Length: 84
Image (cartoon, rainbow, N blue to C red; front, side):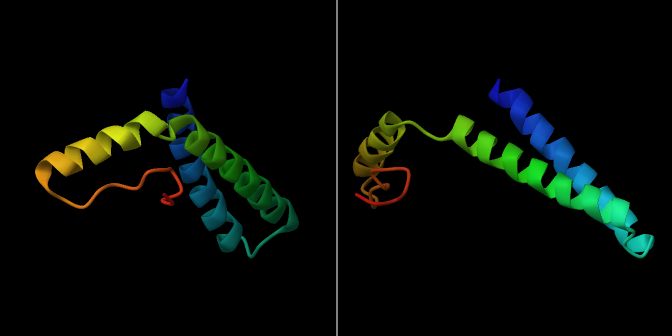
């Protein structure tokens, strides 16, 4: 599920780049400008979904802290937001 979402995110990003270039080369016609804005909203939605789908679990931070302690390095953050 997450693999497909990340693939769609990359494809949508390249489509957005192409649409942006086409919009500028055609001196920003309304239909291409509107499509570019809709693409931006879609790209942002895919990005948020991919971030939610791939966020590390709380157990991943605990494991990172144990490994860092064994190596004698600074500990990793304890939560996804970086706050203890």
